[in-house]
Length: 334
Image (cartoon, rainbow, N blue to C red):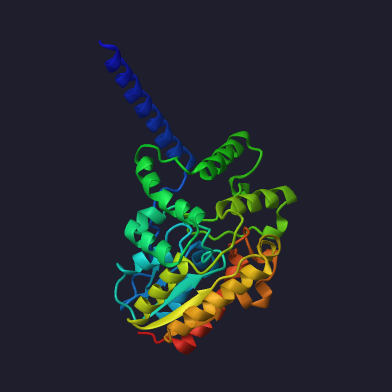
């Protein structure tokens, strides 16, 4: 066999073996690779479903099964890990007709620098390019967003590519189980919605200082330690509200983040920018009504969060009745 053929065979073998290892690691460690996490709550009810679009904060923080039962209507969820208006806009295009759409947002969901790992799987490249151009984003953010598109194809061979945090968290959880030093529930969770229907009951208030600092650094790295607004997500949110408003009433639910996150990772400028963007969006769509779950005083405590961003079961039990009150008073049911 000639030397070029030998080198080609070695190269192909190396790629094949490393690809198999990457796929095996994903399966063994349970790292999320599926973009869509859609679900229907209480599908036995008849009539058009209530459409709920949001990130994991919206679905951990509110009991949608109870909402469906109170409204006597099915509730259809539209989500992807770390979903923002950019991804939700695309998912809404395939949603069934409805007269009521609920859109969940938060300070983290609208942060332009916090980019969903699955953006390239959901949002077309031409849409991303147009939004980056029209919002005059800086080069750093543009490179990060556009870089997800070639990465998407690289992940066909190497699904672990760009998912170092997920791999490390999954590996540590496996080691903890094998060594019996900690229960599986004690492993640091990623801030994405899991497949389990069980809602977490553990409390952020019980975290050690080390665990808290470790998770804060993961979130800082995920958004380059920046909280910026008025970019592609703003444009997508405006289109999303208009599209939902064309079919019926729209309820914008602002989910809270933990007081620890606000204190350690946000400044006054970021908060003001978020409020200004929210006010502008609601003014653009008169059919949209806002529910400020983030302004419920009781939830301003680490006792009601299971990590830095997500409400736990106790927080959910406080937030859900507030949403139901708004739904009963402002939204028609079938």
